[in-house]
Image (cartoon, rainbow, N blue to C red):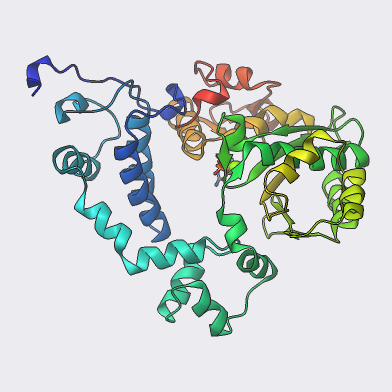
Length: 372
Ligand code: DCP
Ligand code: MG
């Protein structure tokens, strides 16, 4: 056993946006446990507790090696009593009884299954659970009225639950890129979200679209939607959720491909390579969630930073901006709350992510190190 006095405590800065965090995680057992408690809190509408567990997990993710001894954690930020108890349990017993009992609880399991349906949030899931609905079959049998998104979410539940691979994301980039080029030849499309941070899988594929000429992006989204709808309706369902930012392109699974159909699709969308990639991944289409965001070029850097994530990294950037700099950061703009001059002067312009970090007084963190 290591003597306590020989253990060097770790040290990390207080905000996740000050830390470089790659996908390499030396403390996955601990962070998985804390993330599960975070998820449970979020599903129970206890967002404050959820964030506390997320922040604690992010600190452990940023450590250069595995924690073996509680004394290494002395002085680390964001580790509250509850998180420390969980960590201690796992270091001493291999598991945390709280995590295990949460994982096994009927309520948690039901919340996870029901909120796993696209379009179903924790409030709806909670109402259904109180009405005795705990799984998909009970939901189908209950005769509950589902909106369009939820109907599709239920229909494609298994597809959507299955992670999206990088190869699939790239194939979808080909399809959406072709659609964008058709409706607006100069428009640009960028892969954001987890894939931009170097993840090899994701729960969806996130794209940001802009146009080099300010104002030319207006009306692009509806055009893009109609283009996709007219071209893909025979094998894909397109859904637009309540949030204007989110479009879900669901590629319906076609089990058997006729050669003609195959040629038609590849003719419409893609030339060779990428399309073949889709087919080689199992030879059938599947439902995938796709998030499309259109941004004017003047806001592009803010949108790119805001949609690259991780969610906690974004939250911490906004907390840093507000608490440390007296500024407000969003996916549209950076606003200086301290400047009392004319309204215009309060908005801080930026044309790159690097500039935004500089305005915030932060060292630039590249996307692959924003995996807090
Ligand atoms: N985002 C955010 N706050 C939200 C939702 C999204 O800041 N409430 C930002 C940060 C996310 C990005 O948008 O990283 C994309 O959202 P996703 O939910 O798709 O997150 P990821 O792409 O990071 O995860 P995954 O790989 O599972 O898709
Ligand atoms: Mg994503």
